[in-house]
Amino acid sequence: MRAVSSALVVFLGLFIGNDAGAAPAVERDLAYGSDAKQRLDLSVPAVKGCPTVLFIHGGSLTTGDKADEDYGKVCAPFPDAGIACANVNYRLAPGAAWPAQAEDVAAAVAWVRTNIRTRGGDPHKLFLLGHSSGARLVALVGTDERYLARQGLKTSDLRGMIPMGSITWDDELEQALPQYGRGRVEEAFRRDPANQIYANLDTYLDSWPIHHVRAGLPPFLFLIAEAETEHPPVLKTNKKFVEDASALGNRAEYRVLPGRTHYSAIRKLAEPGDAVFAIVRNFVQQLGGVQ
Image (cartoon, rainbow, N blue to C red; front, top):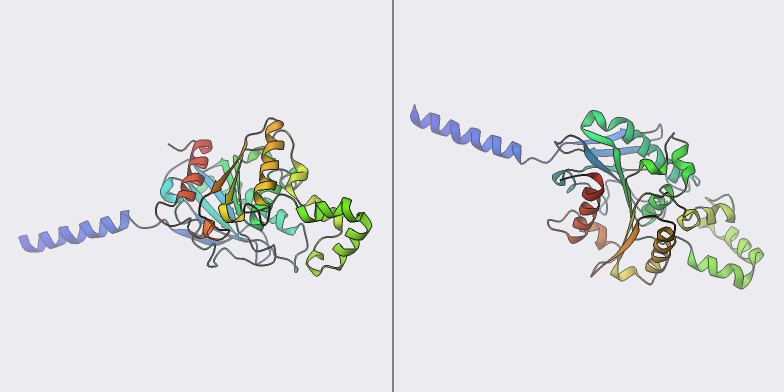
């Protein structure tokens, strides 16, 4: 009888131990809109009042998915740090013309703000993290009031922005305008099939975050892989954004990530002890009140 009891104790101990160390459950494909692409996966830690990071994937606005090789594990380390994480899909071009992608990011923010409290999160502690073209979307939604305004929100409803690996304006095109003139640039712009998702050149130019820097922005932390500082000019454009935003009284900074490339910066985020995740975690914990 004693042997049976001992075995039972060992079994229960293993069971409880395994359960305690289990990964948080992920709610998958939660709908924040009617389109099949308007879906997000949500991971929430077992703490009350936690902040939430919404991750926006890259892919030049035409590809990418929350479940693919580059982005499928991004949310994995956040719950252990006391942070909820939503991995967000959005409508892609060319099927969905601009600005559907930015509108979807704002709609996902609104859905999380409405629904996170019942899952233990704090709706007033929302952060956006984006990679590549997802970083462009994050920076735009965090600067241009129009997108969140359509959801009844303001950029001040966001606690912090973390764009990773994106320019903040099209440097090549901006330099071409005075060099070749508006007419020639506009003609070349219209001929490029990649630009057909934009109504016109002005719509394209307006889609870049640098044109919306103003006072009253949420805090910004730009992350720049060492390998992408020059080509494309991520460092140049992020630095200019930071300087302009700071001059208007905003909190804005950038960090260069030593030894990282455009893709390794995001792919390694879920690895134990990742230095880039530590930067993101510390930013969120500081502004989100996580102890």
